[in-house]
Length: 224
Image 1 (cartoon, rainbow, N blue to C red):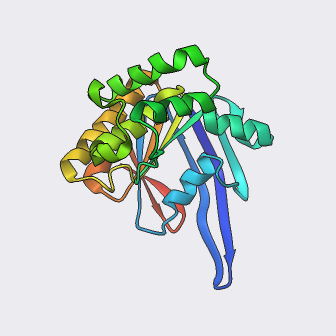
Image 2: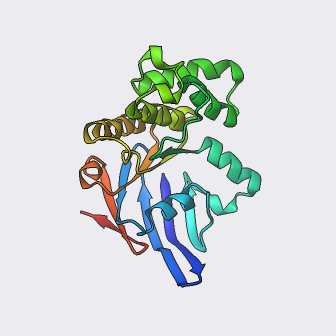
């Protein structure tokens, strides 16, 4: 379970302070898909950065399965990012000179999976996301946008993280493919019991989530 309490983040700029995240508190269960919606600049991406330990909050706590992330040292934060959290981005962020399978295997290497297990695990993950077996050895440029995002999802889930952070994962895709990607995230979350947070500006996409949260000027509230 993800538990966030009283999270704050303020950026100090020449034009004044920007309160990107203000007193954010929420929980998310294992296997649950939670959509976070909001306008551009509302604080969605900042919140994901804090949860992924890509940035540090000014105040508040983030807890996963009873473990306080604030207590982690530099080595612990690096281990968390490589083993306990997976990222899915709008622009896929695949390594262009690696094949689909190699991209997934790289995540397993960073997570220190046994070398002899990486090949089979990568193939299983690509099968789980529905990538044709014949395309596993293709580089990203030889795959469609939807196929690249499937690879990105396989990579994110490969090391069996407890938390998946998806930042506008359908933003570069057509509507039909976007719907398939969200369905795929739901299926993967259910199979691997991972908590999935999906940042999106698309109302229809958000409606496929188990719960919906809205952030406005850094303030988060639940949508009934």
